[in-house]
Image 1 (cartoon, rainbow, N blue to C red):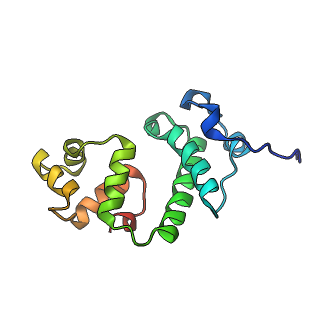
Image 2: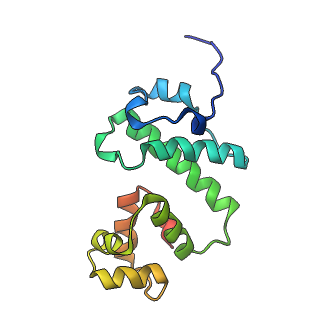
Length: 147
């Protein structure tokens, strides 16, 4: 077992692309070791590496998918503790903005008419349980994120 200490890197400064990410779980952990987030620096670093994966779910191998799922879980845990006052609607809006998803694309994800997607984003229409399930599957987040 190699006990060489891992170097701490600033993911944002490396300008990594998905194609540059390691294929193995072990190498991904050497790049950025997933662990509970305790402060805003850890949070920013973890979000930065997760952002490199975003949009490439179909291209990920099993190790990359497991690693990404763990990062998303750790981020969600931190956000739940750090920002409990943020409403589900605000979290959804932020998620859509960060993912580059428009209201009309949201409607497509939910199987709704385009105008209904706009109403959901504006807060004029609430999400149903089925909508929450679809969003949870699409974004690979716990359903509680959307409630």
